[in-house]
Amino acid sequence: MVRASRLRSWRNRILLGKQEKVVRWHQAGLRLFWKRESKATKAREPRVAADTIDLIRRIALENRAGAPNESAENS
Image (cartoon, rainbow, N blue to C red; front, side):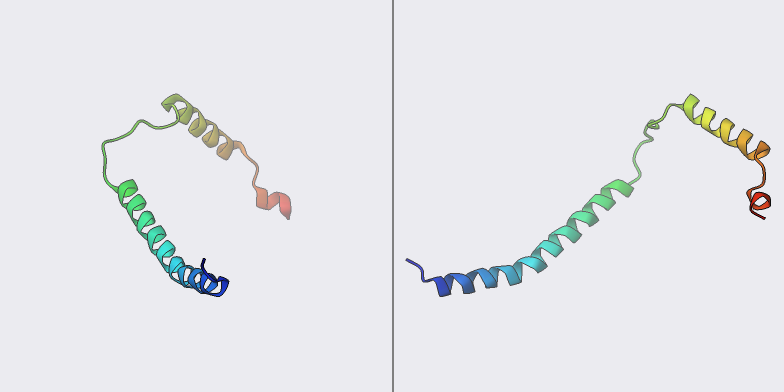
């Protein structure tokens, strides 16, 4: 049977080394993720349909042209 005092020191040693290792793994994982994410790949279809994008742009232009000036309202 293992004495309790030895078990505690064993756990403390693992915890000290574990933090650095976890940080290294996390950094390596992030590097790999962004490397794959930023690679130039074939063009993907947009998540939103083209007609929806056109509608949003048209509405935004119409609102910009006819909207009252906010700074004039706040004065």
